[in-house]
Length: 219
Image 1 (cartoon, helix red, strand yellow):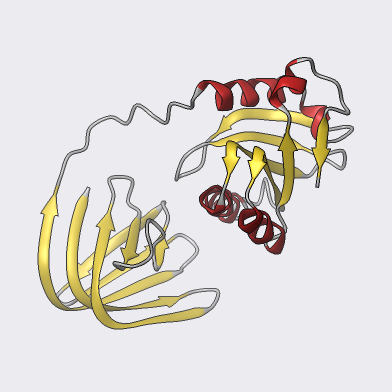
Image 2 (cartoon, helix red, strand yellow):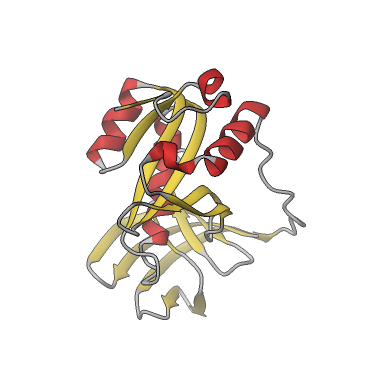
């Protein structure tokens, strides 16, 4: 992991164009080749990023990050305040608590409770930023990514949104729809999910353990 704090401006050139004016920012360059640009006021979400496979070309005062599709992040450096590298070691992965792990297992075994004719593709379906809980196909054969939480909040919706953005870049999967499933879903999370075209499912864990198709309340 390489951490660079620099005063810089960033231009994205690709399917559209976007510009970040000159300011002090954190640049993360990960071992997988990904590059992301962060500010101090957006929690974990980057201002812009390039997911692998991509490569970084460093010229004096200008970095160019490019992927196979020809998209580019052009980072113009005015001043570098910090530049360091750190070896993080193997990642053991996210350990879900008992309820979330059980919900994932039950839904995988009884995926038709999410819809007639649905089928499971895989649990823990991999993406460059982590696994989606379930990858399914609906009755029409369309891909659906399902993210499962005990309590559904905005962070969970943002997580699923990032998964969907990456998954929809894969022509073998796209278009990929999303389902946000939780025992409780906060009102703000529901509004955000529905605005992004993500279906919300409220789960009754105790009822699901006795599995009947009508033991879900769908909203």
